[in-house]
Amino acid sequence: MSTGNNFCGINFQPAIFNASGAWCASETELRDLGKSSAGAILIKSTTLEPRSGNDKPRFFTNEFGSLNSMGLPNLGPQKYKEILPTLRQYKKPIIASIAGMSPDHFVPISQHYLDAGVDALEVNLSCPNLVGKPQIAFDFEKSRNILQDVKNIAGKTPVGVKLPPYPDPIFNIQMAHIIRELKIDFVTVINSVPHCAFIDSEKEEFVIKNKFGGLGGKYVKPVALGQVRRFYELLEGKVPIIGCGGIETGKDIVEHFLAGASTVQVGTQLMKEGPQVFARLEKEFSEELEKKNCTAKDLVGRAKPREKQLGEMLDY
Ligand code: SIN
Image (cartoon, rainbow, N blue to C red; front, top):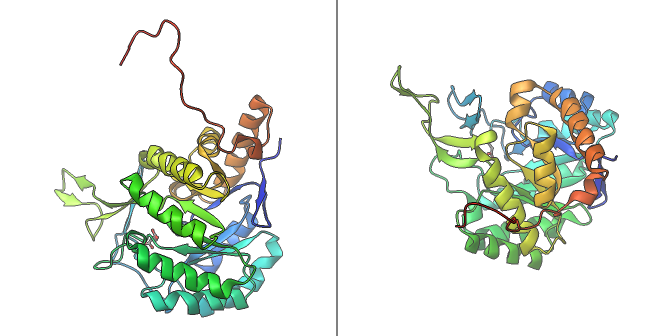
């Protein structure tokens, strides 16, 4: 049963790849993704100038997930533009994540990647780790202007947007209006859950230098599924959704697809397990599809509301 999917003219085989930020900043990491079973290579969110990111320690994991305050460490668009042609040997779609430190940076960064012939742009409006800089995706006018500017130069190259988990559906509705109006090609949800903290009670200290960071992994799967479904419904299944958040097993991928995802990204589990995670996930996803006797595509948005069962004891 096919674990792949095709949308925006791009074939994801399998429909599983890395989240921007996870194992995709250095040339070696990008090559690792190329050699792996990932269905695409997504390059680390890129700022106009290279950045070393926030002070370390800035990444923490435990059995339930991860906390990061990376602060967009990346090599900058010139360097990625040099690397990109060498990644073509892996014959996978290559997507660039764009993260301007100021609204007028999004176009020049995107232009570098368009010149390099990237297959799609994912505009990151949701980095939670830039101290003193709010997540752009909560400022709808600014978001609209940035997306419009990138769309204007992108031509036929698909432009998607990576969003934070919105705490109230009114925000999803506002963003869905923009996505529809500008004909944004795909939506990636979710970025990590912002301003979370872990404390080591013995040492009496925060586990990362910046205290606050974005939460990922198992902790956030229900949040991610909620956001995938919200956008799937608001966009009437017409704009592909990339589900991201809490994927550890093939069953988690099935849940994302059932909620409305057309492909998924893996972040925390990739960092924990390394790029061999993709071969395992593809196998597990394939086994789940065999059991259901359907393809990945068949599953998209198929989850229905639960009906009350006959004889159900609790009647809340
Ligand atoms: C980071 O580099 O801080 C993570 C990027 C993101 O969450 O958008």
